[in-house]
Image (tube, rainbow, N blue to C red; front, side, top):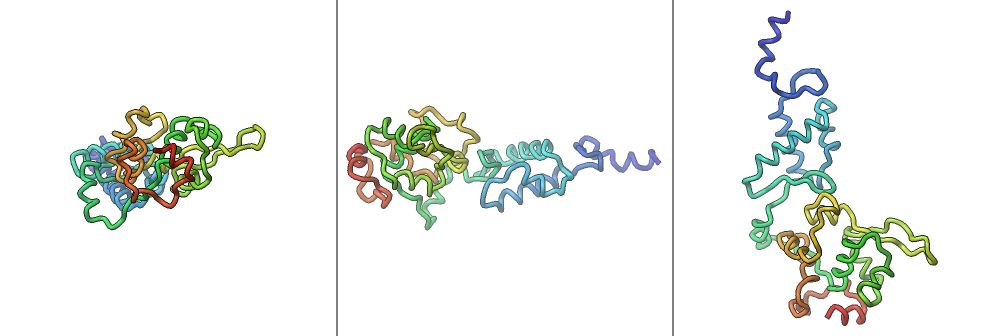
Length: 235
């Protein structure tokens, strides 16, 4: 019995078998993961990808295959990356400018006040509206924070136990995903943020927050622009 079955499985002995129920066809797993990630509109977690195989492939093997798949795509115009919400394919930044020439969708444009507020929340979170105003030196209007909440970059994570119980704001996983980061620990130093954002097509508008005021043309102003006090502060 043993002599009959061993030769049959010999070519696949080096493949991992986490559940002991037969060998795993790593190449097949890789192609399934590739198809799922290429067709997904949002990043997929390891647990979501694990469900593709009905429990036959464990999380460790999924991660191993993802790493191999990442290496396979390393020299192509599209790359596999791990972000806060999971794994996804994306166009490499150096090729995105070519695609932008034929894209009919334009990234949303935000006022300088909105982008300054985002930077303060990102680097000082969790913060209240009062904390933001203390840093900026001007009042923060509701439309400024609403623009960031609606964009999905900022959310209310609680209330501070002080008089009035002001809302506490922090950035979201979507914010990290758009920066192609896995965690807040990977945020670049503030002075390096502009260069980190330059290749990120979804965040073209955010670059304006760290550009000279004269670089922002009048047509760049959006309907989310805050009151005059914030405009004056933004220059």
